[in-house]
Image 1: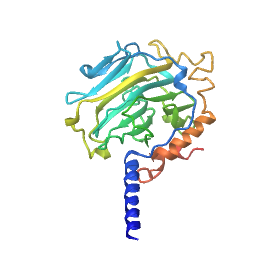
Image 2: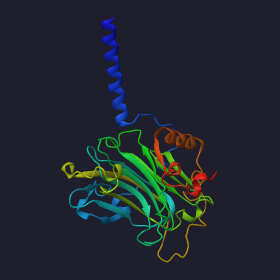
Image 3: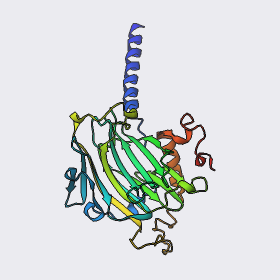
Image 4: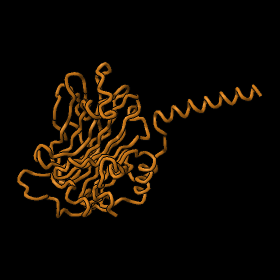
Length: 313
């Protein structure tokens, strides 16, 4: 009996150790098969598609400007901004995050026009939030329109892979029908453009940005764990950028692509982009059931009256 109890105890400890390890890193799932939208468009080199936004000395071009490393250290973060502004489109980048202790560090891939519209800007965000545990990066998505920053529309996810080991694709599809956030081509969030959200749906031309910066005040558990520069430099590697859409030209009085000839590869009106496929719907459901742990639409302590789109059908 004693032998059996010892065996049972050892088995229990083993199960606890294994389970604890899994829970500490997030449960690992295999993503469902989906269409690869990123295969439909050509890559743009960093030097072709982007200019320096800030932190010039911490921007390190790789492979003759095809790829880039963005660095955060005690002196500065760093960032890129697209050379073009876009009225809608498909935007993607393959990103490898810094490993180790990354609390307070934020890596962002996003669209914004705050430079043109400081008081009523639009923004669509991927923000990757560092953590005090080496692998527990958190993916946060957000969307603003017409300066609606007083209502945070955040949704947060645990990733189903280690984002520090290899490159993974983070993509934004934005058109007049919906905005879709995708990770490795799996939709994790869809914001449908309907009457409930129309007044705050992004509609003005935006630039694409890629940045790394110190967000100690809020990024990790509300600022509980600031950036520890003992572990610097923090380096995010970026490659395989894609930016395909309706480019704004300085003399445009209206989006020049509104009457563009429709093809299946047109991210504004092409059939693959106006609504999710059945595979993508399955992928979206999987990502949200398995990996989303926060949605503003469920935060009744924050919003006594939920934003109207939360109740839209």
